[in-house]
Image 1 (cartoon, rainbow, N blue to C red):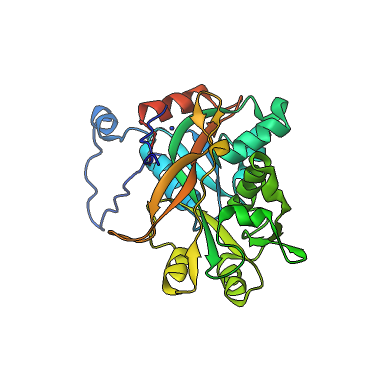
Image 2: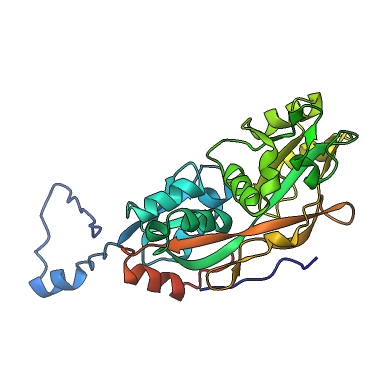
Length: 296
């Protein structure tokens, strides 16, 4: 498998008040001296809003805050949202100036409503979000392709986290590229609750997404701590199609399951995108380019 590619794209004045003690007041300063001592008014930075996902997540806490810190000429406020889908909606409706979104979700929205989402533009690739799928060792599901098969008289069940979250959207896109996977039933339990169901045999797999550098993600730690759980490899050449501008929607890669040498997993990652809309100020886009916004 190819390692993750390095992608660098083009992603009131203050006054001091003096109080004079009782007694003789000093002579007033000449007008010229007053004018010279007066502080220059501070220019107010123009403002913008970036749709950035849930508080506590990589997009909101890391990407949005880093963009604001780097683009000093603009005051860029992070708007908390449910995730990529809502971010794209807000940008298409011109309710925000910038949005963060997964490339696979963006591709799905363009396919569904090209006139609405086609005008949005990729400003930068900020990093990657990778898919992890946990399974119960010794169960009927010990390969990613097994999720497409029935288990006895029922469909396989995969837990994806919140219904409006990034993993749920990614599963929708994966299933559109790999239609057989749509045979699986889905569960929308939160991550840890999903792993509890997996351990009890109530679901057959649990999927989530995170930055590949985050080897201490809570769910990954939980899988490592349970000898009955493991991670499924994802390998299918049909996934490696391109987005506009020859940006891979999914990038095949080998990821370590923990820091240092040891177990690894074959999976796919999707770029984390910074996007602008038709009404995004040109000055803001120029400021992003000057700041060298790219991989964060």
